Image 1 (cartoon, helix red, strand yellow):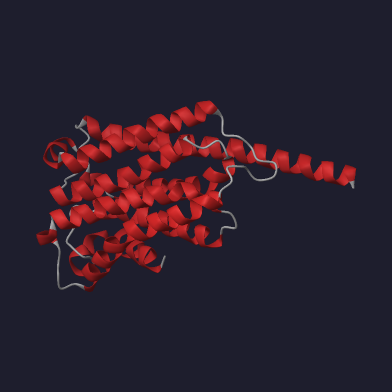
Image 2 (cartoon, rainbow, N blue to C red):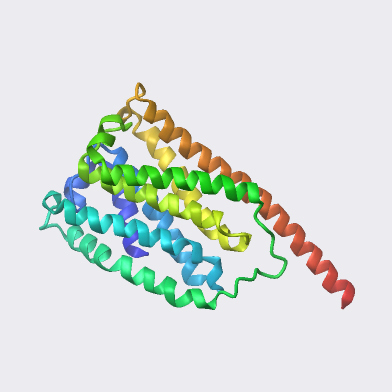
Length: 266
């Protein structure tokens, strides 16, 4: 959590100073803004995970982290020469991504047996249509992630802002994180399982879109991908907000009904 928060501070508050403050120089500023927004969303998730009382409240968020960190590990190996090997941030980066895919996967593997598959008292069910929407959006994000990682040169030519092969693959990791998260939500019926991970995802999306406004000069409005990427982020955020507000209203209604029932039977 401290490392993720520090990464947010560096990348989101000083996106123009990565040559001095980061493990490698990143240009233009939209890429560090994207990364910083993702890191603070991750920090929020792990704070909530550390305080969670039941595994299923946070379980959906762990395999996305495994997928994301695996992308980062592979990108580091493939572009080793692009890093500033003398910078302290480089050692933190390597230490983080040499261990995170394995540690987080083992945490998921160890804890999944504690989930009986049942919901919380008064559990509310995610509507099937919402699960289908998350499944479609998740598949789209994951497809984008694979293209960015496997075909970076082709994606660079159509991407909204300037990329290098390294930042294309790193960006693919962030799309993979969002994609696997959405697919995880699509597989779940329990709202209690989706709440925290969707809060984290919404926080990151809001900050990414604010970052896009800050770095709009980096975008090429003539490229269709500009509007696909920005529109896709707005769409996903809108879906999350609408689902969250609706499900929370249902949850509060169920809680009130349960409380009233307890009072009557008591």
